[in-house]
Image (cartoon, rainbow, N blue to C red):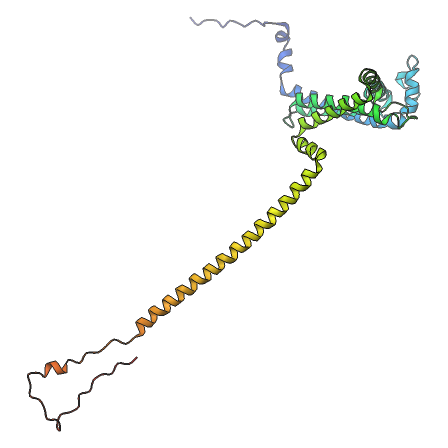
Length: 290
């Protein structure tokens, strides 16, 4: 008798309801990646609009009344509505300032990765953009904030201003400058190895100029050497061709010389009588023609 097939029981709750197969499907990854990419575009538009409408929206957000976030009276001027104003206020004013634009950039990269449009190393982009965002926030709070005293929000955000104050209290402004410089060089070296040669040229410009001059001189010398060798080769070719022509002319001259003709009539008449000088007919010999 045939054995009955035993039904396999689900090992966990996710497998029982089919949630595990849904999460691992390609459709779910594609749709979720599209949602993340669209949210990144929405955040871009909200941040750009907050740069122009941040003065009016910030005053409302700092003293928000219950239910005012619904924006029924259209009191928020942000192009993305009240949610765009709240999101921009949180990212720009409360956190990273203008460096907050790295957040939607990373979200866009993550969406493209999940949609499998491009093959990207998500961890590399995460650490690179994260370090760049923190560095730019501190740099803008240190350099650009004193130049913009009437700005609505700190260009480096609240995060940048706190980091600048804390670091300057511990190691002073020179130490903060050194830390910012080292972090920038390390990040650029991580992106491209050409940063090392650029830094060397920056600290020793004379060597770079002398190196370029020596390269130019060597190029000119190599060009002149190649020209002279080309002329010598042409002279040697001409001389060999002249030698060949003279040798061929000599060979043709030797071939054009006449071959001697031997008269055998005298040897055939040795046994015969000698004819008289008066009656003997003159022997005509063939004269060679050149």
